[in-house]
Length: 100
Image 1 (spheres, rainbow, N blue to C red):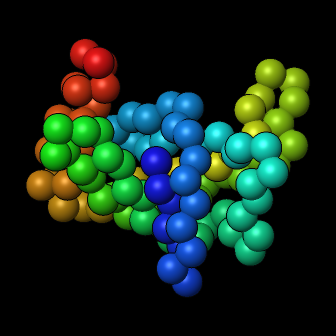
Image 2: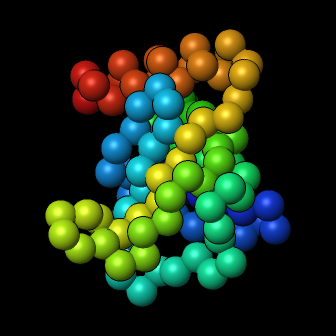
Image 3: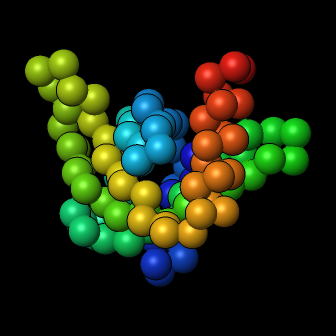
């Protein structure tokens, strides 16, 4: 998954969990996102192969830099689009991921 900030900086991070409501992206060792804060708006790009891609606007809900106590260090996101087309494509993507 690519996470794009408003300033154009792009980070490639693994998705731990994705749903119709949002996603949790894990921090990779040595990758930090300085200046990212709860409430920030970001864009997420998913490439699921077979010419199926998805761009989703999201809001940062949680940032856990340390992890620990059974938690993974990462970023919790909530999708913010009200566009039914975007939600339909997200539903297709989730079905593809469930099968694959």
